[in-house]
Image (cartoon, rainbow over all chains, first blue to last red; front, top):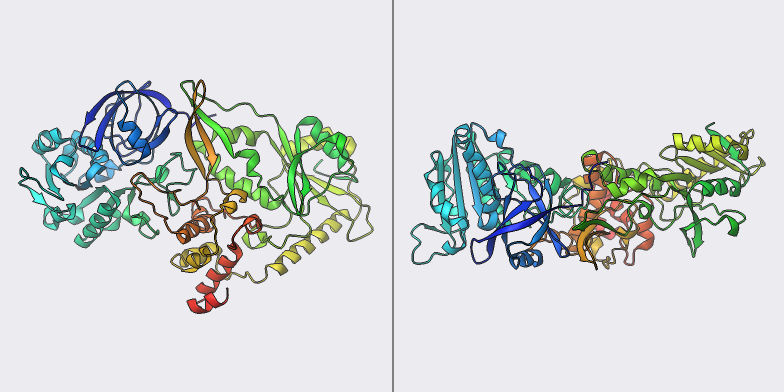
Amino acid sequence: MNRNLYQPINGEITDIIDESSTIKTFVVVPEENFKFKTGQFVELTLPGEGEAPFTPSSSPAVTEQMDITIMKAGRMTGLLHGCKKGQKVGIRGPYGNGYPVNDFVGKEVYIVGGGVGLAPIRSLFLTLVDRIKDFKTVMCRYGAKTPEDFIYKNTLFGSWQKIEGVDIKLTVDKANGQWKDNVGVVTTILNPADVDIKNAVAVVCGPPIMMKFATLKLLEFGFAPKDIYLSMEKNMSCGVGKCGHCMIGKYYVCKDGPVFTYEQIKEYPNIWD
Amino acid sequence: METVFVSQLKPFLDAVAGQMDLYVPKKAGQHYVFNVYDPSATNEVELNNIRACTPVKEFLFPLRELAAAFPEPFEPKQIKPFAIFGLKDCDLRSIEVLDKVFLEEEFEDPFYVARRQKMFIISSDCFEPAESCFCNILDGQPYAESRFDLNVSQSTGRLSAVKDGFIIEAGSRKGKDFLEKHSQLFTDIPEGALAERDKIRAETKKQLEQQNAEMKFDTPIRDVMTATQDTDVYDEEAKTCVECQACTRVCPTCHCFYLYDTKQKDYFGKMKMWDSCMRLAYAQVAGGANPRKVLGDRLRHRLMHKLAYFVDRYGINMCVGCGRCVDAEAGAVDIRNVLKKLNEELKGKSKKEVKVAK
C-alpha cells in the first residue's frame, strides 16, 4: 500500500523574509529532500491549526529547502504571518501538473503576473532562466498595487533585468514620488508588438480579476486559447482529486492543474470568481 | 457451487455472523437502517424491500476520522472483516463510484482501502420500490447481477406455489468460498424457482419503469446536462432549497470531505470529515473569492458533477437513482424534476413553458 497521502512530512521554517506589508517569504526545510516541478504546489500544515495550498516560489533545482511566498489574506495565512523562525510545519505534495516547460521550448514566453501571483512565476522564471537558450525570449509583465507592493524587489529591479534574453516591464496601479515607470493595471503594459504571437505562449498568474482581463486582452491580441496557460487558484484541500473543493467542471485543479490552458476550462461556469 | 437455495435466512446469516461482523437492515419508522446482527435476538431476518435510508458510504468512509497526526505520523488501523446484508443494486453502484475516487492507482486512500478490502457484500433484490426510486433511468435495476460477493433473491411467496425460499448466488471468489465452506446449509435450487425469481424481478422492473415513465430521455443524460448548462432551472429550483445539506449527507456517492487540524492532549490531528458542496463557503478561497456564491450555481455544480463531470472523467454516472435525496430533503428540490425540466428545455420548449410545467 502507498504511504498515507494525508500525512505530511515534517519540516521547519528556517527563515522569514518581509517582501511587502502583506507578503512574506518563508524558507521551509523539509526533513527529507523534496522534489517538485515548477508550478506544482504543496499543502503546508501548521500543526493543530490548519492547512493551505501554496506554490513554492523557489527553483525546483533546490531540493533541500523551498521558498513559499505568502500573502496575508485569511485565517491560515494570518497565522503563518504570525510564525517565527523555528516553527514546525508539515508539508504534503508536491501536487498537480506544474508548467509544461518543455512545451515552451523554441518559443517566446510571455509571462503576465500580478501581486503575489509573482510567487509561482518566480519559480517558473528561475527554471526558464536556467536554460534560457532553449527559449526565444522570456518576457515578464508584472504589476503591483504600489511600488512598495512589489515582491522580490532586489532581484526584480536588479539581477533579473540584466539577464540576456529576458525582458521585464513593470507597472503599478498607484504611483508614489519615486516611481518613474508605467502607471496602470497590468493590461496597460501588454503590447502585441512585443510578441510574435503565433510563436509564443502566454503564462498568466495573479488575482482572479487580473487573470480574467489579462486573458481577454491576450485573446484580443490573437493568442490561441490553447497557448494561454493559467495558474488557477481554487480551494485545493486534499491535493489528490478527491475532496472536491477545487473543481472546475470535470477538472480537479489540485490534480489536473493548477496550470490549465484557457482552452481546457473556457466552457465551464464561473472560472474567474 | 455458484447458486444455492435456502428456505430460511437465519441459518445463513448466523453462519456469516460466525465469521465476521454482520450488519442487517432493520425497520425504523418507514425506513430501513443497518444494525449489528444479533443471532440470539432474532428468529427471522427482515428482507428490506428497498435500500436502507442511510448510505453504504458510512461503512467505507466514516463521517469523521483521524487521517494524519503530528509529530508522530498516523497510519490506518487494521479493520475487522465485516459483512452487510441487504444492499441493493444502487448501493453496489455507489460503491463502484467511491472505488473510482478512492482506489485511484496513484492516489489510493489508505483508510478507504483498509475497509473496502474487509467488506463482504451481501446484496438482495428489491421488491415494491419506493416512490422516490428512479434507478432505472440511470443504468440501474432493482436487482444486482454483479458487484456483490453474495446476492439473495426471493424466489417465491408472492407469485406461485413453488416452495418459499431464497436463492443465493455467488458473485466473487470470496462469495464462492463462503458457499462451499457452508454447503451443508444449502440445497439445490428447486425446479421452477429461478423462473419465479426472474418473474418477480421483471415485475419490479416494470413497476419502476411505470412510475418513472415521465422521465424519457432521447438524448443521453450527460448530454442533456451539458447542453443545458446555462439554464435558469437551477436558480428556479434553488428557491425551494433550504440549504439543509441533507441531500449530500444521505447521497451514497457524494464523497466530498473537509480536512481540518485539531489540537489533542498529546498530539495534533488532521481530521477528515464529510463536507457538502451545497455549503456557501465550500469553494471559497482566502481573500473571499468564491466561484459559487449563488445557491443555484451550487446546485448546478452538484448535479453536473453527478451526471456530466463524473461521466466525463470516469465513464459512469455519479447518481445511482436511489432517491434518498428526494426523501431526505427538508426543502423541495427534487432531482427528478430538475432532470425533467432540463430534458424539456433541451427538446426546445420555451423557458416559459418549462417554468409553467413545474
